[in-house]
Length: 416
Image 1 (cartoon, helix red, strand yellow):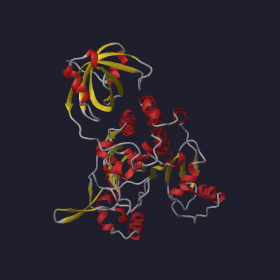
Image 2 (tube, helix red, strand yellow):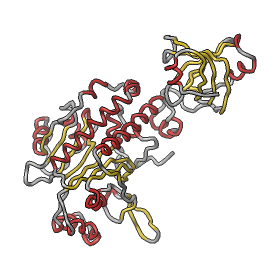
Image 3 (cartoon, rainbow, N blue to C red):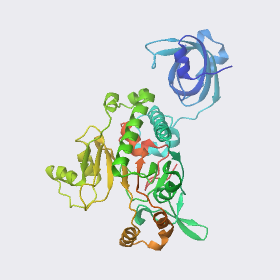
Image 4 (cartoon, rainbow, N blue to C red):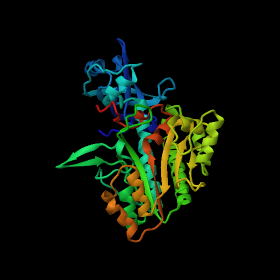
């Protein structure tokens, strides 16, 4: 017996089909049973009529419970009254795996759903988000591969900090101490002298004591490092990547985006160039809204939100017009989804880097291997990191980043 997916069955439209999956919903009476079957592609209503079937098959139908797995054979036809416009008239039914009373019902709290995440993944909402997530990863790889980049990887264990010591996860490493990686940047800067154009997609870890809807302790970053690139070059690359991701998801996940109540036409308008403002200009915008920020302070979430809501596309905040500022940038997603990319033109002055490390309480001698990348044929180079879950949250119209990853890890959540 050859089984096809529910989506393939609906594309076939008529005739006998063999489908299998899990019971999404079920209701029955003395004469009929209505089973909504789901698989990874869609859902479909299956009608079991007692008068048309053997007693054994009817008794099997009466044992169907929510989330049991089953195989169904029957004739498919269009029916506008059915949830997805098609219906299967069942001729054969077999329960593969029974299901206890399923613990997830309507209107349960977000925390309960996180406790039961291993089961909540089966919901249509989570399935839709995870499909978009898969497309985002595919888009990132396609973007870089098509441009001749090499995909490379750095260690997950690092002997030093990259983003700041206060957010490091310390782990025992045999008889020594190491740290879970915050970014691949230091290692990537070594690899570009071999490969010039590289990227990675990998997990990163930040021990930030934050309980907001935008922070994860373990998240995925798409990072790139490119030899010879100045700040303007890397800004253009970052813009192009985001536009490519949005276009790819719109083309491949229209059904999922609609289910998630995302405005697809709005996403279609995400095209280059993105608006760019300097850090100084950002402070001026905030001042007009009654928010005074001391020059040099990082923008907080609330301030990023105010700026982002003034634009329909991602906005890039740069610091490069003022000699006091660094050659760096942040890309802020629209609608209050926060920073999705941070990047810079890298410093190549060893003495300046040593001075900065000392100011941060770091020991420069621990970075001697990194300084070698400047001692032997240094070149201008730039890079950035894209927070994959932040992008997914924006595309999926999600109000919590924890819904963008199968099993989120936060300051207060380490199970399941």
